[in-house]
Image 1 (cartoon, one colour):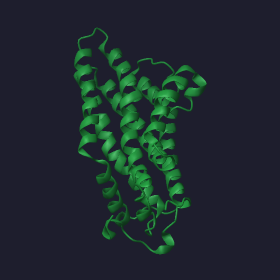
Image 2 (cartoon, helix red, strand yellow):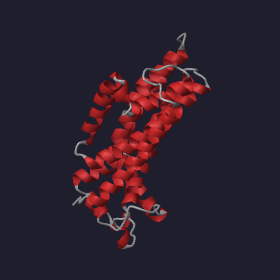
Image 3 (cartoon, helix red, strand yellow):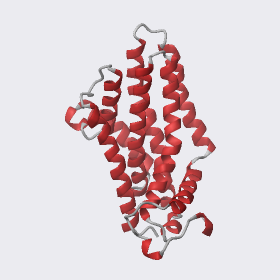
Image 4 (spheres, helix red, strand yellow):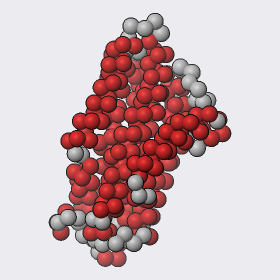
Length: 257
């Protein structure tokens, strides 16, 4: 990492948690993280995953109740698979890869606010993940001829999901080794089986809230989706903000050398 790639600030601000990130510090950090996670292989492989949504949308178009069929597909494929997995791959890599290979120390030692580092890493992940998830699902909903209500519901539910998962997995990438394994365990075991089988456990699973958003906005009933819309929207956004704060706190209190 070159000396010019990370901006400098007064030394007193090196471990500060407060304050709004300054644009002159945030932008170089954001560009640095964005370039580090956008490999051609990742973009192509996960972009091809989204093609499935368009193909299924074209197939669903010819079904009798194509609106209900699409919403159930968007819940199973979009909210349960593509949104969390794509977010995991990119968000966990922003700080997880530098932490594991030892290069994070060069950034950590610079006099840059820890909140700036955490926010820039999160923003870089969101920049990549949002279009990779939202675009194919929106196109699939349009191709399926579901109507504007379902298209909007699909986009909004998955956008909220990406917002929360990117925060959660950015923190996870810094917090544990092998974040992909831990993240997949959370997605497949906790959200897929435990929370999916119990209404009580579903209250601490992001998927239950994003599924409720999709169900409320499209007016298509889905299992474990009885949460009021405002609560279903607020909880994932609170998770996103809290995990970005925890990431900054972890950077400020941990010796990464």
